[in-house]
Image 1 (cartoon, rainbow, N blue to C red):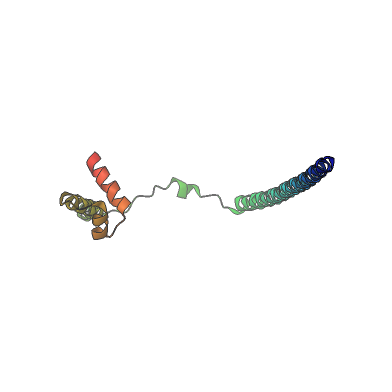
Image 2 (image 1 turned 60 degrees about the horizontal axis):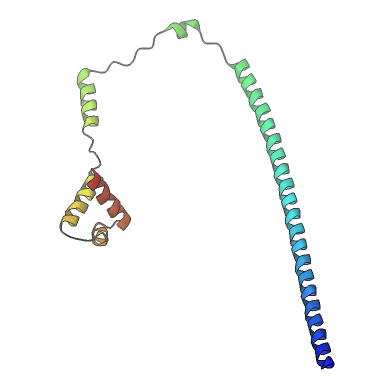
Length: 156
């Protein structure tokens, strides 16, 4: 009986030893992964810092170039003559009939005929008892578009 208990004890010790080894390996893997992640985060931070520094330098160079060109532009820009500044520029004279015709042409613009007719068609087809999918197929538009159009029309 003691030999039986000894073998069971040895088996349990072997199993527990294997369990400890597996746990130790997993812990080492987790530590390595954590170190890699920290290293990658540090590298990413360094790269971002370097990129921002380069960007800052480029911006400073651009600002200096722009200030130089502004300074040069201000130096070379001639001062306007007082006669030209004081001179009043009159708009061109257009006869009233011509202006009235131009404005009448602007007023006669149609107000979204395709949208209005599409909504009207949707309402007519809905009154005929067609489903939203059938209306969408007939009008060659999306089902959601039909549903929204009908919903907005009901709310108005």
